[in-house]
Image (cartoon, rainbow, N blue to C red; front, top):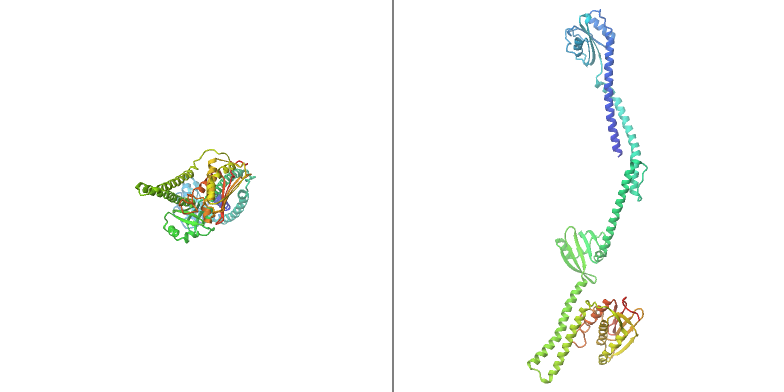
Length: 549
């Protein structure tokens, strides 16, 4: 700004000084010409018409004027005498002042003389009383260029003064104009409450800046909020996401991916170079999916190659577990159904072929009925397990204390068969919101397991407490559970007894049904067990739907 003001001021003033100089030089030159013409008229008065028209007379007149050139000519312009040079006999009729004098009686001209070689002012008069002879007097006069050259030192001095004045003006102008603007700009940059100015000329600018500041503030706030939401969304994602151009050129990584890949800020992702298969994939620049295990979980790494590249990390632990569970489910169902079907078909074929003695037919028929019942129970268990998700019947108040008393008698034969002692510690009047058939399913499965996996001569304890959090506990002194069994005991078709012979073991659906019913009702199901010492299943009826005793 200062430089522009200085350049503008210098340009204007220099051009102005030069134009004024030329104008004044022209005026001075014209004034000099007028003065010379008046002086020549005065010199012409010195001419004595009675004197002879000779060279001596011309030189005498020139001496009276000191610097003048005197020329006498005939009426046609032929030179008779000249005080400066011997030019007698030469004609000057082509000179402007001579032509004017011949035609009009007198004439002036300002020109460079070919004889004197100077710029001259000539005044020529026709002397009619002497027969029309011509008298010309001329004096030297500087040209306009000479006037300019003479004035040049003064012009240069004025230009120097002009530069100094412009420097002072630029400083004053910037102080008076630029500084308020700079102050307004600094205030705009540092103030958060808007800018003000005492200068009326700058008030529209201040208003515009305040509006701009408000708009920028809104946009920055929106950008920050968008970034916050984006970061919140990315960091809240269960999936990990990495956007990158190369192992060391990372654009974005969310919290989940950073934790899984052990990423440290401003460091390359180690997995991209240490894992050979991933390194080859990145080098090939082809999109692909890989599976890797981080900790105890399985993850799918989906690389989408482009500009930039995107890595999506998805936790597939549950889906892979579900796939394994599905395969196990199919294998277990097939196995569980195949065992009784093989027995039924085998005995039926023997009976049909007549290859069985009559005394053994009744035993075989009994086996067929037993295996048919086992197959029917398996099918019923599968149907019950699947039907839980679609059960939308309303809950109602169920007296759990009364239900235990009703059901426990049905287990007396099994208890006597294994010589198991039964302990009942049930508070009366404990009620929960559920349905009778659901609680019957839970109690039957837990008590059946407590008998099936108990030791000969063991103890089975059924406890029920009321209060703020009613709690059911079924505890046995049986074989107990290993750490692996504890993590899988509620999986479908998982059994501690691997024989699948239909003797002591079940189908592995009972506890899966119990867990599913508890989860649906919002109850907390826990297992406590020590291998070789026994197991306790605990249900806390902690749903908001429960009724306290």
